[in-house]
Length: 327
Ligand code: ATP
Ligand code: FE2
Image (cartoon, rainbow, N blue to C red):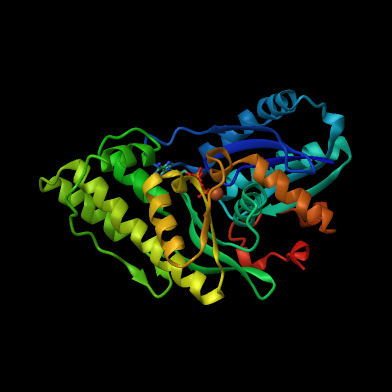
């Protein structure tokens, strides 16, 4: 069976089409421009509404299939921004009803994990999910994917983008921060904040802007942001791995494309006799293929989403999801 997945939790609308073997037939996406200062949920939702039909047509044509070949429609049911989620869900419902096929609501964070497991071939990993809006460490334990640690304030990517915006860097700023950090060498003091298993980034943002104002080189500030924030992520990930006794670490989310972060996680994993797995970039960022694939996994395990249960869930937690395919 072929599944079409609609991802629309935040500023990206993406349509993916995958088959039963997780062959990605299409994975097209469009992101609203966030360079002017954050995303307004309503504007992002309008962006998704405008692009929904053209992107669906584009995906179907790129996949070399026709609409009647699609046997299942999956959508990102949450967590995310309400107006964006509702727009994505409306598009998915309309398509499923038109085609007369099943509809399935997917948890966005679980989708990052499932696509990563499938394409990297790891079995039972601890996921470090670091993106714009999310920063979580997730692992399978006691029949659920559980969140072992997460950000107490902003996602790491949002912090990087906010810093970049105040420095006049292009959006998204992550790749520019990484490039500048390579030219940095002096580690300036930023507030390392790990609280129990959780992390916080807003203090680092304020301090980094202040340090640059007081004359520290941008390259050194970027370098220090990376060293400090990534060390925090690695510390929490390692502690979760030790706690659940897992020897695989999987990366997901746009921020994990950062080579320095990958290097630090790899070193930690090797020192523990564990292995690191990184999906290709197009499957790390928010994408429709991961929603489509997770929809198929769920559907194969007998999960169904009735139309009346397809309302979006802005605060849909990772550990609320039943995982019959893991039994
Ligand atoms: P979510 O809704 O899951 O929170 P998102 O749409 O905000 O996701 P992604 O598409 O997963 O995010 O990732 C985008 C983020 O990744 C941006 O904040 C961007 O700056 C960051 N990013 C991309 N490349 C890099 C990099 N090389 N280094 C650091 N951050 C990066
Ligand atoms: Fe995401």
